[in-house]
Length: 137
Image (tube, rainbow, N blue to C red):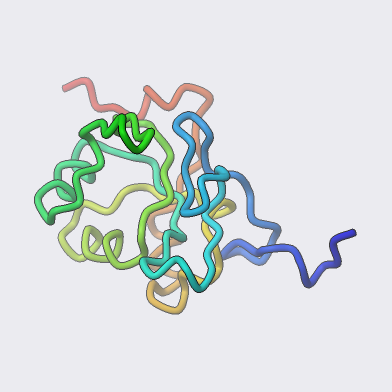
C-alpha cells in the first residue's frame, strides 16, 4: 500500500497525473513525467506540442517530429502531450517558443531548474480536442 510519502508530486503539490499514452511518453514510458537518478535529462515537464516548439526543438538538435520506428517512437505532432526535458523547455522559453505546460502532470523536481512562476505563466487546460491547439492560419 502506498503511503502519502510514496506518491510522486506535481508542481502544484498534488499527486502526479498522467501526461500521455498516445503516444506513450515519460522517461520510463509509463505515461507520466516521473524522474529518477537514471533520467539525466530530467524529463519532468508535461508539454503540449505546438508547431513552434517542435520546430525549435529540431533547430537545437532535438528532433521530436521524425518517427523512429526502431525505437517505437512515432514522431510528435501539434497537440501531442510529451514529457520534455527541463533544460530544453527552458531554452525554448528563453527563445520565446515555450510549449504550454500541463501543471498537474509536471513533476515537482522541475522547479530545481525552472521557477514555478514561469511554468504557471505557460499553464494550459488541455481541451478534449487537442487539435484545437493548432493555429489553422
